[in-house]
Image (tube, rainbow, N blue to C red):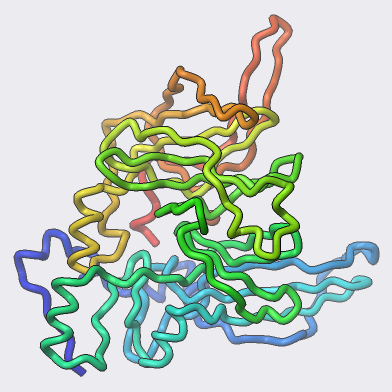
Length: 356
Ligand SMILES: [Fe+2]
C-alpha cells in the first residue's frame, strides 16, 4: 500500500500527523478498546431499580479505534456506537449498534482509516493511482467526517446522533439502525456546533453554531417547539441571532449555559486558528492541529436574552480557562434586589484536548 509522505517543511503544520496512537497503558485504556454490538443482552443489576422506572436510556460515544493496520490517534476519534439500556419492571437489557456513517462505511470498505477525525488525518483514496493521490492530496481539501459520535438528541419523535460538527444522523430508537444524514445543520448552514444542546421549557431546541470567515460569527440556532411535529425536525434548524467573535479566531465550544431567561456563551481563550484551519484543510491535517490556546487572554461571557435575541452589551470577564462542559445555569435575586446569573462549569487552567 502506498502512502504519500509529507515534505519536511510542512512539519510545522503537521505535528498531529506524527502523534502516536493513544497509549493503551493509560488509565482510560478501556475507553480505547473496541466494543461489540449487542442485542437485548440481559444486564446484571446491582442494587435495585424501582419497578415504576420503565423506559430506554440512549447514549452515544466513540467505540472502535483500530481499523486494519491503522489506529485513531485521539479518544474522540473512534467510530460512533449507539447504546440503549431498556428498563422494565426492575430488569435491564442492553443493545448497541455502530452508526453506519459514511466515515464508518468508507473506513471498513478499505480496511483502514481513509476518512480521518478530530485528531487523525485523512488519507487519499488508495484505489486511485499514484498521480491521482498526489493530486488529491495537494489540490483537494480533506474529506469531512460524518462520524456523529458524541451525544444523542430527541426532537419530537425523531432521534439523532450528534457531535461537535454540523452533522447529525437520524436513527431508529428501537433497532438503533442508522437513518438519514443531515449536514451543515440543514438550513442553518453552520460549520461547527456544540455537542450538548439544550431544550427550553417551552419545547424549543437550542444550540450554538459557528461560521468562519474574515470575522467568525457565533450563532444561536433553534428548532422552535412548533416545528417538532415536522417529519425531520433537525432539518428545521434556524438562526435565532448571531454576533461576531471578539478575535479573528473562533472560540471552541462544546456546550453552553441556559438559565430561565438567558443563554450564556463562554468565549474561551482556546480557539480554532483561522489560518491554521485553512492551511490544515489543504494539507489534510486533522482539526486538532488548528487549535490555538492563548494563555494571556481572559475568558469572556456573552449573555443573550433567549426571548428577544438581544445580547447584553457588557462582556463579563473571568480568569482564562478551558471548558468542555457546563453543568448548570440559574438566576438568583439577593435581598438588596441585585440579580445574578450563576453558571456552574467544569474548567481547567489548560486545555485538556491535547491530553486525550
Ligand atoms: Fe461532552
